[in-house]
Length: 390
Image (cartoon, rainbow, N blue to C red; front, side, top):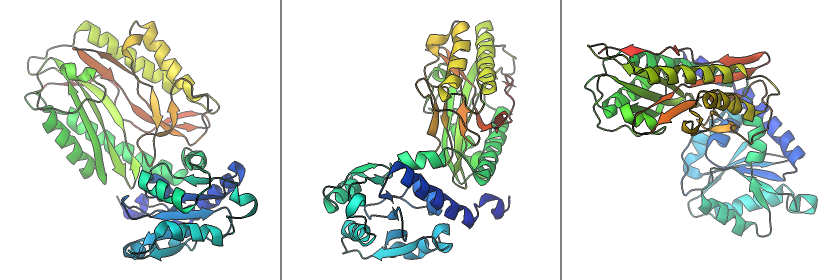
């Protein structure tokens, strides 16, 4: 994979900033303070770690945008695509400077501390540490702070063509990882060992990070977020494989349930086959329900009705899906109560499951994108029940 295919063009960041400011006007925000995290990466291309040193993209509704960073981060911040394209200026501070006071001074300099702007809220990104929030409250007494996600959610949940491309690359890499694991061998290995192999394969297939590798064998498959243990996988049982990571910042997430038959070709119990078919039907029906204008909660309702009609509704214990992008879980959420309409460009999981405590579980998950004519499925690995003999 060449590096160009993993990059988002610099011009895209300028377009995102323009859209951000337009939404700020609509939502009546005086400014946004965006700290290290997915919102900052979305707007600037900057990748960093949250620390005790304040790092803020200060976005006034009008006027210059400042990227406030500690002196030691200046060179790195200067290479961020938004800065490189001339849409933001780096404002450094020294170790002994009062960084919150510097941000407050910038706000005053942008004339956002007088007139109507003084009464309008400042948006803070969701990932900010409490210490930074408290520091800004002290530096700007009397100002009203709200979640910047009110603005950022509208922007990030609809993916552009570059984001869709990276999500598709991540999904394809996750599919190849699933296929490699499902080829075996599995009998006699521990869940932890298989989990480690999944992480290695994700990296080998192009991921930058392997974030999770759930391996729930036998009764452990009934725990949706099971942590892989030293339990030994045996013939005659199922395994729930749920795996994902990030490729160029964009997440993958897929789940397949496989059957380990062993050398004696032990067949699944009839009830397991019935439940597997039911979950697959629920997954297919929910995917078919995806279309612009459909309330997000309807996708959950379709899957839930299918499983409930099959007699296993009480064992479907989670929402059917979550948005995905720079975070593995983000808006929009496919859950009862979310009446927001789907729109082309929204990407999310469709992952119904049935979990029988002490016995086994079945979950099947694809990432889909809402397209003008329905759902575009990003994961292409087979949903057929795979049987591993070794």
